[in-house]
Image (cartoon, rainbow, N blue to C red; front, top):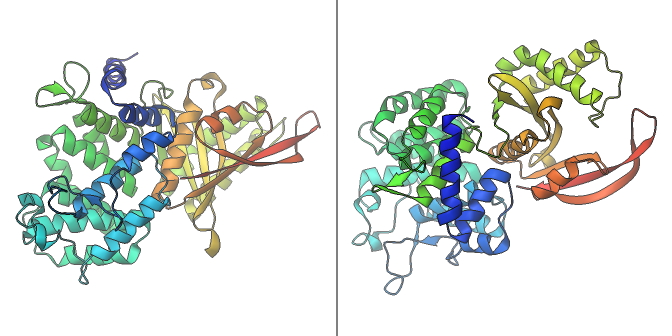
Amino acid sequence: MTQSDTGLARAIAFVEQSGTPLERAELAYLLRGTPLPNDARSALLAGQREDGGWPSPWVDPSVKSYSGIGATCHQLARAWACGIPMDTPEIRSALGFLVARQYEHGAFEEDITVAALAPDWLKPGNPLARAYLTANAGFWLAILGGHAGAARAEGALAREAAGEAYAQTRWLRAALRWRLLGRETREHDLDTLGDSLPGFYAEDLAWMLQTLMAAGLPAFSSLAEAGVARLMGLRGVSGAWERDGAPSVRLTLDALCALRACGLPLPGQGGCRVERVHSEEVSALIPDLARLLLDAVDGGASVGFLPPLSRAEALEYARGVATAVAAGGRVLLVARMDGRVIGTGQLDLAQRANGRHRAEVAKVMTLGAWRGRGVGRSLMLALEDEARRLGRSTLVLDTRRGDSSEALYQSLGWVKAGVVPRYARSASGDLHDTVFYYKIV
């Protein structure tokens, strides 16, 4: 175990010992993908008002009932980090709230009736506060499928005079643009953030990394790598992250969530780093993909091929994966240990107009020497995260009935849809039943 692993284990132990039941449930989701139980989920979403927003903590509810834009964005970030499906009634209601609160010209601002109560950084009439709320709410509109409103928010930000802005506004706007615009036009938004990292506190770094990863920024980008290094260096002597000189459960959870979003292994997750492979990189991984397939088939895995599988056939399969990734119809993730590819998983993205909310999880494979160490779980969690980033809320997969993978899927909250008898042939020639699972993310 490395020194950083030891520190993270101590941070996790601190949350387990000092956290509330909800915070421990959040930790279980981060580490093992365990869905929040109903009581924890209700606690997380508690307080939502009839209009879909959440109350601002700086407004006394006994004096005034008020749903805040900033407070609602904060709750959406918590829900996203805990794996709450984005198509649940509470989240869709929150989307409706944001849509209703957006000005016609695209900006967002807290209501003028709370001007005397709002802190300066949220005060209506403050241009910096307006830009911050527009970037924050616009980002969540983009995540939740409110693309027209997100585009209007980005347009409102573009019309603002360049100059002073909160650091949070800069990364929220960068994430919004990354979500909306082509790669060639969005990368320049991130340039200045890297120069600002030395001045960021742990709270800022955790929030920034979670936001950029949710938007789809590659975990191997220089900004993400630098942010992770800076965040790891800000742990206290206890191993946890501290606020006002004392270990903080909330901040430690936020930091662990950011590290997981960036693909960093947490203790109990298999010790590997999971990352998305982009189209310009996939060709270099063809030998690794072929090697994984050969190893899986030789090990008896039900992955669509039968032994004996030749290297030529495995390479042909790997080239087909590269072609599908380049065409945009498939997402490829790899798990690495010390730079070596030890596992992989894929999302096949439905292309028809009535199915663009769906994806199929396929070819989740781990090298034999690494099976049973949590690599498959890490890949499944990362595939679910990637699906959510892409707006693919309905996921499906199938596996041979009785396969050890069934226990993994069930532990991650996948639901058995049904069994098709005599569906797939094994190396022995026998026909085996196949089980179909689904999950709404």
